[in-house]
Length: 351
Image (cartoon, rainbow, N blue to C red; front, side, top):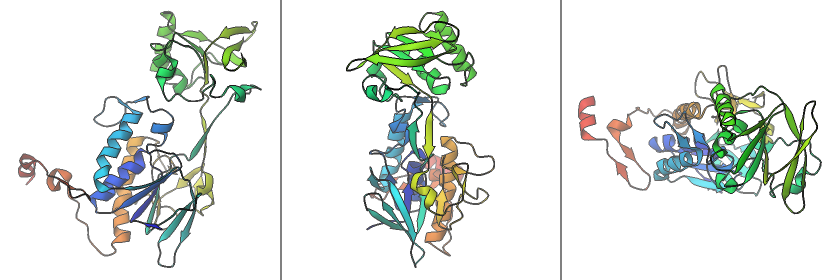
């Protein structure tokens, strides 16, 4: 059995940052994630997609953000159980919890932090009879490696931010990009809509609205799609890739059966204190929790992780007072014996 101070369910950005904050408090963490690598959605779904709202980074690729977070927390030597889903959680007589995965791996700790985001995801697929036959053979539901589409003909379907953003990005990568949406209006950000229109006017994106992809053709691989436009005859367009970006359906999975209070497919927490759930000792941080005014932003997850760790310290060290010290003053002591000293000039100025 793996024992630690805090079991973190979910190794996305929020979970990884929680390792760092816990490490500052000399608390050890072990992370469980169903994915084979850390990073959550940032690694699995859109590693090459730029993120613009991370403090101090005007722009950073999602995969690079994961790398930076891993670098930041490695000094605190977190443990990882990857490629396994947290299946059950059982409270012990001593007040601790045992989390068991679908492969039988057991983990024990006095505190559990659920940082699993929106849970597991399944792509929303268009209602095309034979689409499953072409999955991985020209049909993709998410873009992990943009270079796959270098000098290829690409048809994207969708009207949200992902469809708009990837159409814009691939306009400089693919041989041709066709964006199909069933309405003339888009759900994405206005600046993205304007950029797509600009690229259309420059002849770099072929925009077809209102329309839908209604059929796909090919032998061993995708060769063409049929696009039906309202009040017009359907057209057959040759293409190498068809990427329907209709969003993902989140599912809490086994977490829904753990006795936690659930609202709108998310875990209710007390945000007035420490993001603890209705079960003392179990916290929920990041996109998977809900409370009044909740914003599903990575930076909000970082804030929640910080307060969660402070509360976890009190549970693990009852009656022991912790004095908050700024890292600019105290530096950072890693579990591996390393120490990053605060710059003396900064220390002197603060003192």
